[in-house]
Image (cartoon, rainbow, N blue to C red; front, side, top):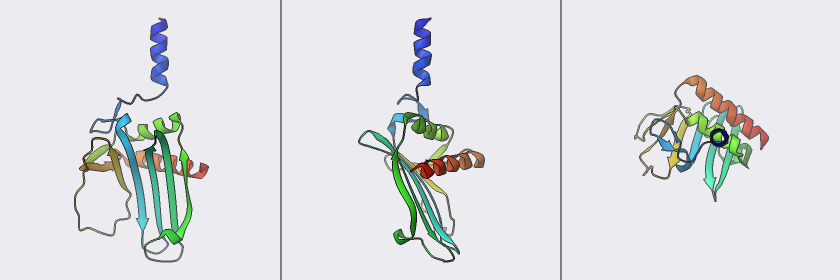
Length: 157
């Protein structure tokens, strides 16, 4: 009984590095970076980036917002209105991984299409070899929940 309680407690403490996420069964401990980027060059141009990454064993979140109210064209570094980095708690990192759990990862492809404002999402992991990096959430509602999670993290920086 004590052994069973200890096992349950260990499972509740977070995802093990071997637990997999996405349809490609990427080990949670192998994820090194995840980018979410949305951009608009039309009227009221903007750029939004969220980045989750591991550096020196620390799990970090970075956000950057660029805005050009009433203007057209790409938002540049001169247009940054908010940015920051924060180290994530185990709970926050596990919440991030939970968003990836049922996502789909596909190969990068070259495309001549333009005009899309995104979001563009890329996942990087230790064994990806530069091929399978394009990430998609399983539903629009899950993507929206992820965006809300990121906005909350950005607001706390």
